Length: 509
Image 1 (cartoon, rainbow, N blue to C red):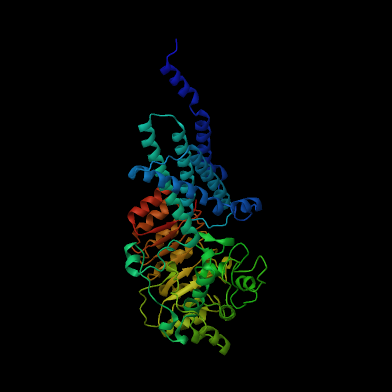
Image 2: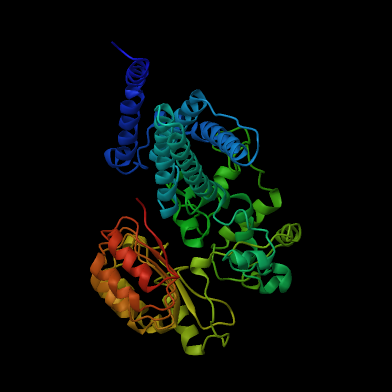
């Protein structure tokens, strides 16, 4: 004869949500395996369908955020007040389902190649996946008919944990969209310093006479920061085009070079800005404030004059029209400085006559590539943008007489090898070097390890390995290291960060 207790036990057994549990675990397994199955985004040949669906990610992601925020509010009320709301299984199901949908659409946005590979992008991707997995587990826990006290404790642990992961992933997403310092950009300096950010320093053009202003840094770069950089920066580079540094501005993106020094008409950024406003290719896009005529006139003037990153207004021929355009600029906002290429601590002693003659002589072989950091400095900067693959070891050797004066060098996409880097042993004041997409190997890092003033090193797309980056532990001032598309392991990166706690390492997934 069956007792009432046996009947209840049998009922609970029959009602156990095996279907939800098995299906939920399969979804979790799929979400975790998804990045490994899909592989790297194909930014060169993106799928229109993937890009189209990925654009729905910002729309869908607000649904799970809203639902889980409401659930957590109900739980807090239940814990600390007499009001005892009980979130229903359906609400949690909708929250978990929308979280999974947000991750799937977000992954399509990621695979479309809209965003530049970075550590922050990887953190956001996995943060979203872990949140969706935690949301599904919360649903499973809520669905099972456990003892009331155990069920409540386990459910609350899961729901609070899910919201914690959601908050972390949401913060990373906002940082990718608006920039890592978006929330504190205009915060007072005491608050910025308390949160670990550098204080804002007003370095606007008003601090010095117009003729002494560096055209790119003091006039052009602030315009680009205001109109373009929000969508073309580290972590978010539409069209694989970044405009937050001079070298990347010139290099351009999927459509080719961003600017053509000496020819504003052929420069992509001018062409896109001058398209009709109703054209889909017009920049900035319809949702952004359009660039002003006087701002565009200044940029065209600078490009036509050679787009030199170091020349001052006095060194360029300035017309009355351009002078009037500069006077119309809004100087109330502090410019955003490209910290990775900022050259500090250079003694303003001015170049010697011999050095000036050497630079003038080399200008024939390196047109527009070799310039002084400023009129008052003997430090030299070099960019290979006008040569690229034509710059090999033989051509590079011509720079040997001036290498001791180098403070910044961009050798990206050139044909140099370890032999050229070996010549840099004399560049003791070098603070920034870009060697991305060159043929260098670990042997080149023997030389770099001896340059104790290095602050920024870009090794993107090179053949360096764990053994090579191990040598960089000897660089006390190293602040930023780029290791996208290299064979350097996570273990080696971890050891390097332990040795240099202040070092930021940027490595794509």
